Length: 118
Image (cartoon, helix red, strand yellow):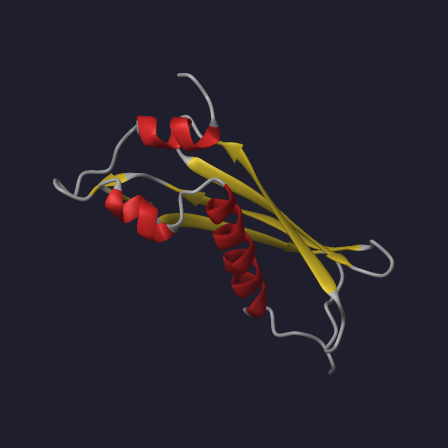
């Protein structure tokens, strides 16, 4: 059918999320070093138009919530036309690695990485 399998979009989101987290110096390794895991608890994908095999796409990720959880929005577009193909979001929560307890607010390290004074 010459279209990308729907499950690939989560891979696209993951690559964009990892790049975004590296930009703020809070990659998964740095999260672990800071004493927190950030498991994904929710993913939403809205397929607007299909992505075709061989199509050049751009995936944008941006943090839209950070106080109680980490919510990242995604937008996949066609590189040539700029046409919107897919949008979605993921939600992650902080878990203290020492206690294995989920936090009900983001730890201060996230604020620091984002350059925000809480």
